[in-house]
Length: 109
Image (cartoon, rainbow, N blue to C red; front, side):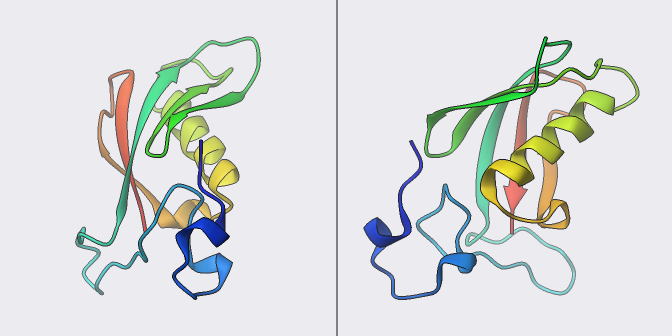
């Protein structure tokens, strides 16, 4: 279950945190992954009856999408659902690994 902002106790404003992080996040200008980025593991369920997000713990989520797993359609739909669930823009979410597998990892900057 994602932590509330008050539970983090860091004193920053709420927009600085995706719902699953206890840390601030940043990438340098080259787009390199830093230790401050949050890694989210996603268990993908393509061809589902409905789009749905199930949090398994703070950094693991099962995402059901109606999109078919062809030509990256399901991965893009999963990225959209993850961005919506975290309350961040899609541009802050990058696929790290799992382009063609059901277990994927995304970086949230």
